[in-house]
Length: 169
Length: 290
Image 1 (cartoon, each protein chain N blue to C red):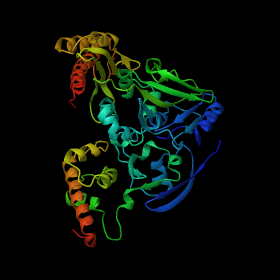
Image 2: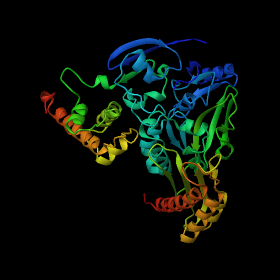
Image 3: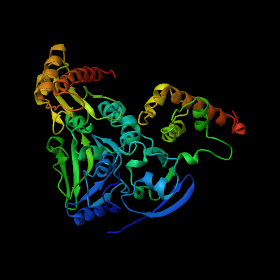
Image 4: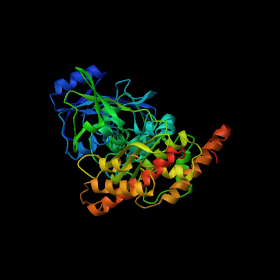
């Protein structure tokens, strides 16, 4: 039995390689092997969505997939949201609308929001609530989280309409 | 929580997967979506010596309709949920996919895994019972088609043999006048069903039921076919009296146990209520409604 397995991923556009045990969960690979602790571990039982990352563009619970399964694939985490131009519109939305209280669910909540808005730029409130239904906020701050996503939706559509104004409001 | 050590093997194609299963000698498990298996491994309720990852096997994720409906076992629940053919022709499957776990889980979870895991709390088993589906099991020796009534042996136990992989689900073509629906009561998004009821009705030209399928979720050691409830519908036009008789029969046929999701008596009554509602929805769909 091989003790470790090589894993090569593109994470936030950067290629990373490491050898890990087969049983290493993707969230531990991201947090401990790669040292990127923006992705949180909440319940560790596939319930809460705090560990949500984008795997080839789709939000998944990184505590419920092995790192070896991500070999050769592309991952985005909360660390990849901010650019030299500033915060991602979703981050800006959570800031402006106070879309967090304790902040523990926020990285996962934002990654789900990013995936939603990239596939559905103008979601209804019902679509937003449905999209984030796998991400739990125990502060029960859902009202402001929904507002934050709506804020980001407007900003992302405006930015697309006027690419020159990227980074501004 | 960290699972016990295991050997990881990524299958290149099905023959490779069969070979790895053979080498595993009954101690290797197939890893598809992993959304049930990995949590069980983290709790160490499952400790397979090896995992055979079939996620890189091509040609196992598809939805095709030519005569009957064929769903590749590796089709993700989110793909089923948003598939236009499924939505317009088999809305009972859209009902089902849309209430499995939560959207994040559905991005990885597979239709084949939902059946092969044989958890009575899973949602597809009841729906497939209602639809009188069958599954294709392939192995190094060939393939066989297993009627859904012969698939579920007990909790977490199917009639698949050690060398077999569930590769496809087959669902009969909908009759000219037919309708189905799946309803589930859950305490919160992502929880298993308190109970669920899947209903599929086929009518003749005069509006009388010629065949009825009813499957129940999480009220027994496997998903349950409610045969007496089905029989109570055949020959009726699904009027209030038939709905009352069938839903009461389904409740009587359910075998729930009391747990954190409620006492058995409560769950039995939920089966009655959900079955009655699903029958009304199936009837409306058969008549052209949604």
